[in-house]
Amino acid sequence: MSGSYDYYVGLDVSRKMTSVCVIDVAGTKQCEGKCNSRPQDIGGWLSNRVAAGKTLRIGLEAGSG
Image (cartoon, rainbow, N blue to C red; front, side, top):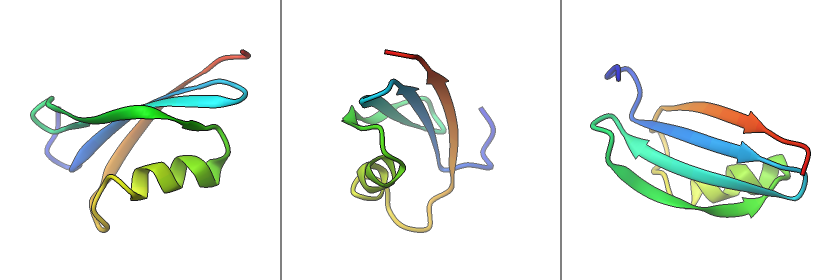
């Protein structure tokens, strides 16, 4: 992993709920959970767990369920 980001975020997005996992540049899991799939809910989930000003690289998997 590159040092250009502070955290990496994995999103498994479905119609109603999104699973979220945040790891640091060393590959250590920092937090994991679920939230509603609305953009404001995902943003709120992350902003409550990741300090302001940190850079994130986000990857997602989208399903239809």
